[in-house]
Length: 288
Ligand SMILES: Cc1ncc(COP(=O)(O)O)c(C=O)c1O
Image (cartoon, rainbow, N blue to C red):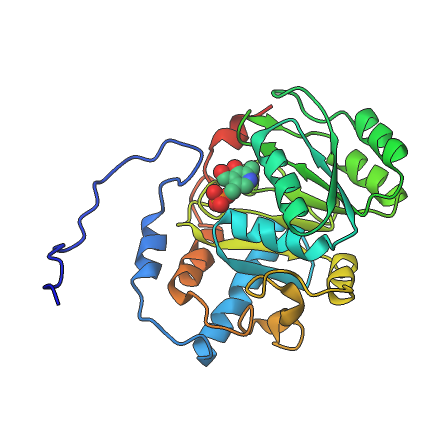
């Protein structure tokens, strides 16, 4: 057997992060990441998860019980949302006006859904009239997805309540991609009637990637718990949350949890007294 590779001590360069994520992390978050490791069933961890859930509800402006950090980057929370809400045979209406809207459609197809699109030129938000026309044209649509801040174009979707009300008039559930908007621009999950929102920690929330916010209301969770087939991913199967005590802060699934990224998440979501804002400006806050 060869000798162990001599990689030395880790010494990453000190960069100022100016892109739309990962963004620079507050020293308080870095300190949280070097606190002692605890087990995912340790009472102190359970207590911290309760705090994380409370802080995420505050961040999303929601009372949703089902508000959790998903292990993984924003795409993991995205896949948890879409892969659980979309069943084989379902139809999802997805936007085609940006890269991440396209990814929503790809994930819905992998979940076994049929995808129809609502179009707008790249660089433009969706027009509510086009969304209404897409619902009228395609008949039964089960899930409507839109991107609140489309990172690929820097466009902020206005009139969110108008979009959600069109979808609900057609009995469709609404999934919002808020990866680049949360913490950077106004986002009101409950007031705007969004059923599911997922986000990323490494953008306007100034956390490291690894624990991605997700919130579902009762209507969305009812669909998840009454699926005819199991979600295709075991790791991201949200129905496994039922009975684990996730509502009261136990582990997010029946497996281990990356405990140190959750410590960082707790710090990243706390409003910092005396600081200008809980988040920092990235592409989304410059978006229209
Ligand atoms: C709007 C949007 N959705 C989803 C994602 C995917 O997030 P991640 O790269 O953290 O997996 C990104 C990442 O840039 C994004 O900007």
